[in-house]
Image (tube, rainbow, N blue to C red; front, side, top):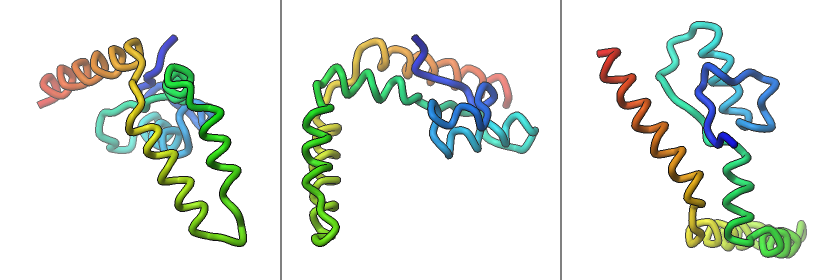
Length: 113
């Protein structure tokens, strides 16, 4: 499985995989606009992280605790979910792919200069 996509590999059809910003950067890159070289970490990486750290049930529990009549409850839930992510472990295969892609990008940038 690949957890990384280069901007040039992404189109608007990949919004579910790359997010809105990633899909837009892909479209701009493919259209020839001067977008710096880059990549997105896909939603598959997110899913692997959540699964590895067994976070799904806790995320849903915290999200359900947010109430429309108590605006700070959403902020509290968001903060708590952020803490779950901050203290989680990135799966080895995801971390390895990210590091390899950073190394590849730095080699590409050295060749561009």
